[in-house]
Amino acid sequence: MMMLIFLSIIFGAALGLRFNVFVLVPAICVSVAFIASVAAARGYGLSPTLIAVALSVTGIQVGFLGTISTRSFITARRSAHRRGGADRPAAAARGSAR
Image (cartoon, rainbow, N blue to C red; front, side):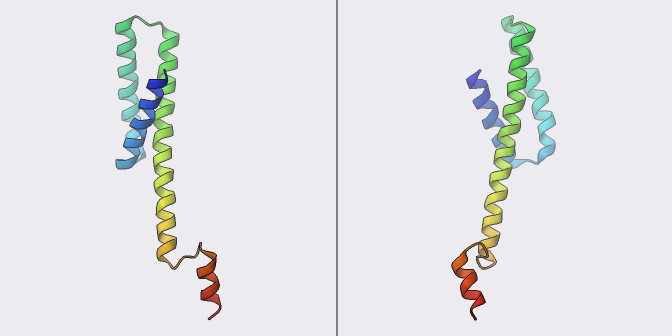
């Protein structure tokens, strides 16, 4: 189960680097189909399969959200730095002293 969670988070992060939020629905459908087929081939019951699906879907969304929020944070910091460092107190103090 831990490997499934880690792979789902990495998969979601990879999707977040390249695509927008609309790719989550097909990615989740592919993930559910893959987990269901593996579970059927190995003869798992319904309960472990549903737990694996829930963990996979959650992992994909967490990875995607983590990547998007990190990218948004980095972009906001870069734009603030390019505007003259409004988030840096020393630069703001020098600018107001003129």
